[in-house]
Length: 250
Length: 250
DNA sequence: GAGTGGTCTAGACCACATT
DNA sequence: ATGTGGTCTAGACCACTCA
Image 1 (cartoon, each protein chain N blue to C red):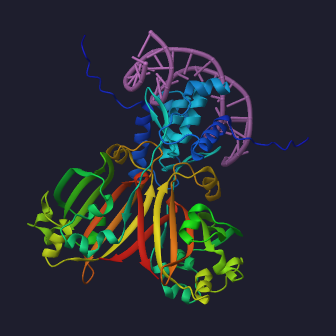
Image 2 (cartoon, helix red, strand yellow):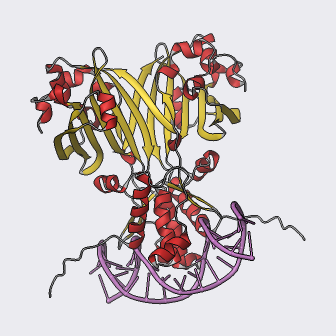
Image 3 (cartoon, protein in one colour):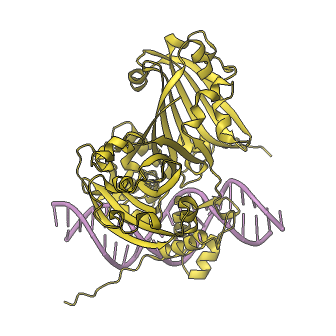
């Protein structure tokens, strides 16, 4: 028996996807350009519908292309927000009555909606981090230039913030950190945990994410002097809309 | 004409995927368990092959499941490495002859391979960051418990490191940062930019990533005293294998 | 050898967008 | 009205895994 050294070429749909990807990455096809449609690909390569679709699905799942029903498949566009991990939370920010978010958006317009505030029993995870049984929870969604980019959920120890503006939709100048300062619990230290994964359906729809877009999960704990935890903030960011920046010394 | 208020139920493949996702997220199916195969799904729902595949593709592209040829589709397992953004780069680390990586792995075994070192003309981006025309480039791949988890490429100004151990495979105790210290350019400050996106094919194969796994891109610049840039390090991490941690004060 | 996932064909009907 | 992507059927052959 002769062993033929099979070359194992990649399947057709991969080769088509590779070819289109090259055109995108080389700038041959650029932001917003229309890719060849399913019919065009079928004709050009003489293949079946499903195979052409498969090729396009590769690029869509890589986040390089976005399908528009009844119109075509288009090269995706990016313009991330730069989020400064430390500067944005410096004392000067909220000390001067400015919202933390002003630091990120740098002139671009942003809105907050889907705000929900409630008092609930702390989940196991929240109870462990904040060392409390009951928590006030603030949920909201941030949009920049009309596009949703972040979901955020903040937890506060209920005993600490009960009856303060932290439990109200409008937290006043400087936001919740200024209010916590009023209570004698100014944030002194933060830890952020950063993860990335594919979104779950609820996250996808709230953020309006096309397929192939991961989310960045930031879990931040704020501590007052003495290491007292005062806030747990779980953020879900559209990864295509963000660059996180951290500065630190050796 | 009567407008019937169509309810728009999600398509079958979505409903199947949703059902399986629930079982995974609820722990009903847990790490490493086998999902129902294509044939089982076809039979259970009375649908065609392609539709059953489509349902499984959803979970695979969400990073929740991993297909194994000839065997089945399995629930994916996680156990991330915790990477401390600041502690790991403290002066004590490399000052004591310990590699930065020892801080991350905490006892787990790790290996480095695919090492390539060369001197090249600096790309536009590298030239802008490091302010130089020629750069020494160190590429390598890190694996933990036998699985590749990170690709890294470091750039150094060629004039600065020419003829030092920075250009050799073995950089000696304390690694490149200790060597830069020997030259009078100890790292004093770092900035890290963090992004997340879907991997490109080369990254996928070098990291052995299953579909549905994003990568985290960390772009770090090290500065010596006086703000002199001495290293640009571009890292590509398997997002499923990492949690990044950053600590900072208000 | 039986079962599994990977690739592919050749049709079909639908909702939607654009012209 | 035409073309687009979205969903689905009913087959087929292959490479691979596992018992």
